[in-house]
Length: 336
Image (cartoon, rainbow, N blue to C red):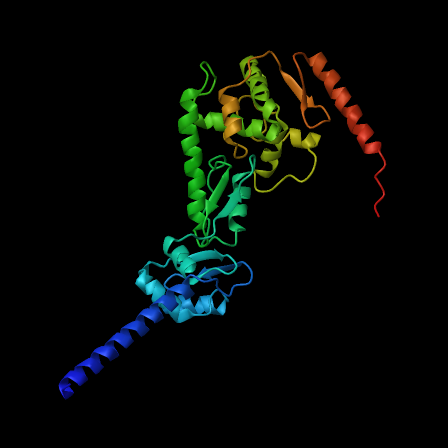
């Protein structure tokens, strides 16, 4: 065998050995990236916008999500490292490198939920948005009363507060666009805005689903008879203008408050909503019960007693006052 042939065989053997070593290293890396990681307990982590692959790898190592940052960076690079998305991530215990890369490439971030209860004023809704620590920026000017639809809204870390408020406004607009054309005929309402006004009063009068359409019917009966609506929540709004809860029981002086929102001193609808009504209250106003009821008062059990005549109503009021007095006279249970 000549010297040149021996040299060629030696070089070929070296290349083959190097190829085997590279293949072994690749198989080892593949095994590692799919193996359980070091994270002992679930961890939530925020990845800032503009972070590069190496910075993300270092952040994940510091948080204990992974212990091989360079291998993560290499895997992320093979999968298109520029596609890793910023945001708030919830990593499960023992999450693998491959799973972290896939989760961040797809942007499977934490989904937050903000529930807006029915019947809050717009100022109260904006206060809830301002209190959400995962949102960013200012909510902006307080929108018009009744322009936000109560619902549960989903958002991600860093979303703008103003954008969430705008979604609430868009949701109310969409709800009215859908519900107004489907209203029952001959309602004494001239516009969707008037529906919102009356729905806001119904919303504040009862929390019971089966009472909304009945109470809406009572108010329509009063409007038809030329009677004032005489709704206590409108008086509370007249006193506070929705800036804060009244925080006390209404008194006789409150009922005489000179305000277009006080339905004890003016007839017809107030000039605007007194709160943000939910979809169910809107539907109740646009599809009210047909009846001859004119009056209602609390029945002591969370609902209301309804009446057609003033005599029936006075009887219900006397019964409610008696129940209230009995409740006030009951001894307070001792606490330990």
